[in-house]
Image 1 (spheres, rainbow, N blue to C red):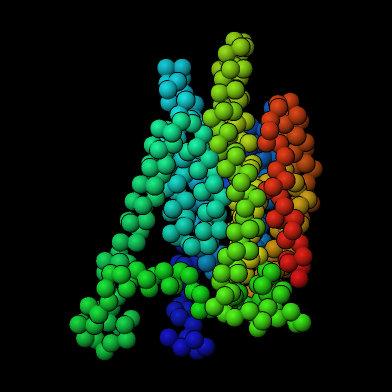
Image 2 (tube, rainbow, N blue to C red):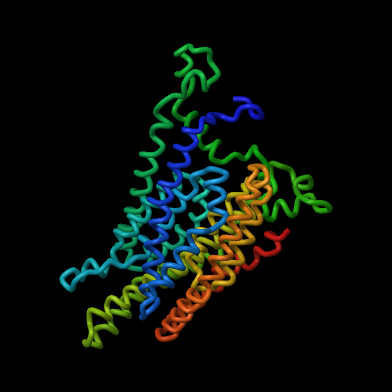
Length: 429
């Protein structure tokens, strides 16, 4: 395939078919996750009828200009991996309704939902390797969930998670390892004997090599991260540091930036069972409206975890975007997906970050000749925000009132917000 002259298949019917698949997968995976999670958040955090507010919340989350331009303009399937990731976050933090006769299941906090969340996260990770940006936050939270009880419970939970991840990865990677590539791919002239020239180990290494392309340099194009900003004169960091040391430097800085969110999420996961037990004691001391209070407490324990997991995954993914090795412009989508669900936490910050993130895609937008689409999506998004701002702010105020009514050690999420706040200089630079 000629890099500059080949444009692949450009038949109108084929293009319509491919773009139709993007739209269908958007609706089935990403839109369904946004719709369900926003409805759950609105139901839990408010006590009044908030139908319009919940609808606006969902519309703003679905109308992110960056995601629309990348999936339907640059033409990719980012929303599939993002949708699987959001579904996994929901299942990892949810609390299941159980009756009194199922109290043993309640005491284990329904860890089966974490297993389901791990499966969905593995699907997202194998669909698009950029989902690895969420992995430190997810690992810290699930490790905390495993450490929240006795040693026996820790062993069973940790082993069950490990076996689940291994099985899902084997099912996904087996075809690449078992089947040899065709002779054309290997550069042969049609001789079938060429298909036996690679071993399973070599094919596995080839897949890993394609997933982690260290040979392509510190960053891609004009991505708005630290390394691109530091590569300008007079610093010129790419010329000052040997290329063989650059991956280790990027890894060290990335791990340092992800550490605050991971520490906080480990504490959140570790305290999950303790918070449930405290709520159970409060419920037993108040026999009136028993079932209603039980549902209320379970929902708010889950919502505390949702909120901090969204902040944590936004923080770790932004740390990867700012400092990891070989970052592409579209990687900012990994930050926007969970952050879009934090509108009620900090409306102005989320909207500002959404617009700035879209602006950082401008070099890629120009390459794809999407300047008109860029302008239109920004104008539409700003108008939607202007129309829905009073409704969302009202919903957010009700959420803040609900927080004040219940005591919690997890109301402050400064560890989650520190990386997004520190991102301003790099994003503008």
